[in-house]
Length: 99
Image: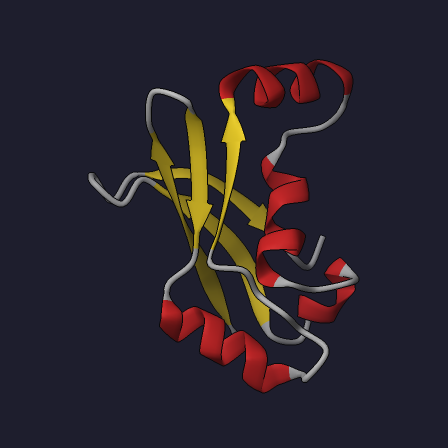
């Protein structure tokens, strides 16, 4: 098993979460029901408001970005989801899928 890398870019408006074409194709090969997206953009104010009332946004972003209906669908495929700054390679957050 492996980790899935999600790139996190910041700009003037907010954050963009994205996956590369290799990861998209791998996810599609796991099940015809998985429909990964190219990217998801979230404004700063939405992210901060969300985190005041709920959990970290990343725990909700990755199922939508990867196109899965249930987080349990990844348990046999990957160990962790890594949110990475693509400019520096810094690991911003790791989510354990098996937990």
